[in-house]
Amino acid sequence: MADDDVRDPLTLLADDRARARERDDPCASLCTLASVDAAGHPQARTLVLRDVDDRLAVFGNETSPKWQQMATAASLAVVVWLPTLQVQYRLQCTTRPVPKPRVHESWLLRPETPKRLDWFYTREAAQSTAVASREALLAKLEGLTLREPLLAPRTAAGVFLEPAAIERLDLATDDGVHDRVLYRRQADGWHTVTLVP
Ligand SMILES: Cc1cc2nc3c(=O)[nH]c(=O)nc-3n(C[C@H](O)[C@H](O)[C@H](O)COP(=O)(O)O)c2cc1C
Image (tube, rainbow, N blue to C red; front, side):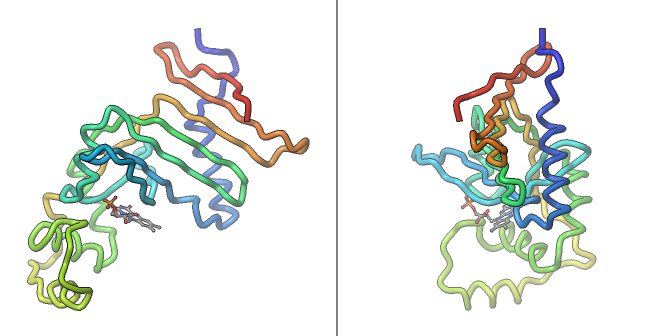
């Protein structure tokens, strides 16, 4: 049986992010996502952590090497640090693709320059490949002829993050002993264990 009175940690995370947004927390809409690259090296980067249909999601471009890593990994590590609350979350996640129509809908809301870059990845050079110089990049970006109105390229992509485990570390305790709780998703719900901080 799932532990009684265990709060769903996803609701806890959503509530904490909402509180952080109210405090203008610069990290409220961000996460750090770590994956393992083709050579076996850990790679971490900042991404916008989105709420899509009440699920956590990240968006990017399939030309990026990380996209393959994310799609094929057994699990990904995601960190959310909310400095205004002094709270950290660490998530172990599997992923599922966000349906393309949903990605494309959201893509339309992007600013102009990221939209052009997404087309650049598809037409000219994949994300994270080397270019001759910043000037050469800007010139090619400027020279890209795109059909108006702009629609998402086929490489625009998103994945839902589906946490199997969530650890919440709260530094803002009155007694100075940090509160660290691990939630594990099991068939009958979330189970919790307190960890030595
Ligand atoms: C505040 C911030 C938000 C970012 N959001 C995204 C994002 O949502 N999607 C994305 O692909 N890259 C985003 N980036 C860029 C990534 O951190 C990274 O530089 C890029 O995706 C290339 O990473 P890679 O070489 O690991 O593939 C963001 C960077 C910062 C600083």
